[in-house]
Length: 332
Image (cartoon, rainbow, N blue to C red):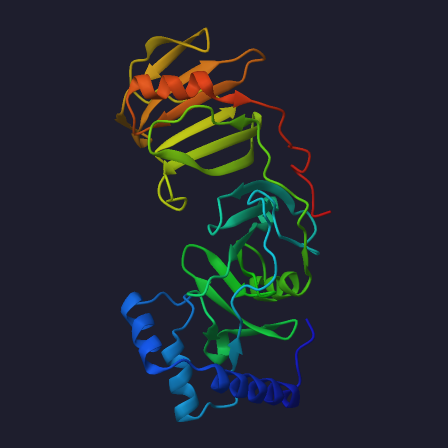
């Protein structure tokens, strides 16, 4: 991508620091933020307000830039299943393989695969008053995306990870795994990122009845060898980012017994099976109710609830037309 000149970089630094100085909070707010944050932060975490104030006091070298982002002012998507951003460019051969979303303020994710060329994942996370407003990164890790400062770091087990805010509403995280020259590719993708607001996470399942205290917390649509699949998650009410308590899946694959003996049960008026909690070659698996539906596809409901509760979820879940038309396609 086209990089800013050193002269423009100095201007950006100066403007940013001046703006930062005018917005710096008082000491009480800094202490409050420090009390709420962990002492040990991962490299990718947004820096504390205190760090920004300290840098102003000490004097900032030209190689280090400060970026200010205001709390959300623009309207966010009213429907959390609508995906806000998409790449305007991807390397040849990359096609979309999965979409997932959780209720605000949890993230939304899209993933593209390029076979042996690697995988690219885009996560959109709404900004909040506590997720900024200042981001400070060491000079070698900094990138400029359309005049805004972001960061790019190699994260063990994840590949190259780029993080930046394209507006005052979202933080975008781009992960490139097994991609050749990932930083250069990632910076080009970031530069050509565009608003979407039309693509949706629209699967084939809707929860009916759920056990008391649970609510819908996520939907994912993805590609398997047997075709498109939909997965719904339910967590404790008000905890959309917590681990799923109950999961419902519709796909072309039969669930693995993994050493357990299936118990015959009636599911949706059909002969189905119940698999208890089990430990096997696949590790720990929660109790599962499964039934093969008309057309050959399998409905599976599993989770940390008893057989009666899982059967009730399976009997009441709604099966509706889903949108898999984007599978295997580059961004449109």
